[in-house]
Length: 346
Image: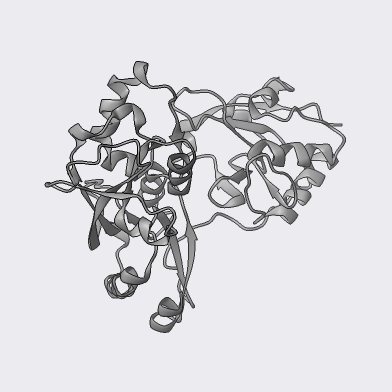
């Protein structure tokens, strides 16, 4: 950050870590200006600036890979010992060849596990055994007692980290300056992850990264709905955390449970259970106070819930930005909409 502030004092970054598909969707809908990606997306509407390229290495328990040869190829690695990232992480795409081998051998594997981050992968290798694949930059923060690095034989797998942005939203001078700053600090960074970046310049919104920051109840809303919306307005910006159900931090269903408990209506804790409360509402008849439900998984099951603040927008606790307001027509939420319920409010 010191290098950033020195070179770009008028630009304030907001940094979040998201899955690749979420980043691409937000770039596509102009909800962020740019992102750092290590996945080769190849979308015609994206403009890319390569920042740096690095090798992958094998982080392993001593007993999980052969001691010879010194440099290993995929044929030397037993796929049932591979710890991998979950679907959606660019690292999983880079190690796809090994992952496919593991999938074919899954019946022989004593345990299948998909991790959500590099730290977890390292911990699994240290405590249980096996091996994982890391970018070289991620190894610089390992302690001397942890270092168990083996090199790949040629051709060595690599990744290229790129600054990407929508072609229709490119600001060339600013983009060049940002790329220059990032390249200058690459050698000092201990580990790069997939980052979502939203930038704001003084006096100029470089990209609209958030929806409305206020919620104004209508005088036509029932008193209980007005109280729900007033409470939601006070909670805008509250951070997200798994299983959170208090103003310290919320997950999606914890947020809705909190709002409705404040007007005397207890809701089930899980979003899919909340879908059984009240009466079904057609999308064209939505109004403030209705619960709206979404599926963010490939299995098309309810996994997210929010509260309508009017006929077109809802407030919710998002995993990336906490409590916020989004339009129902949003290019991410619209295709994931499942249905709505009108709770029996007093």
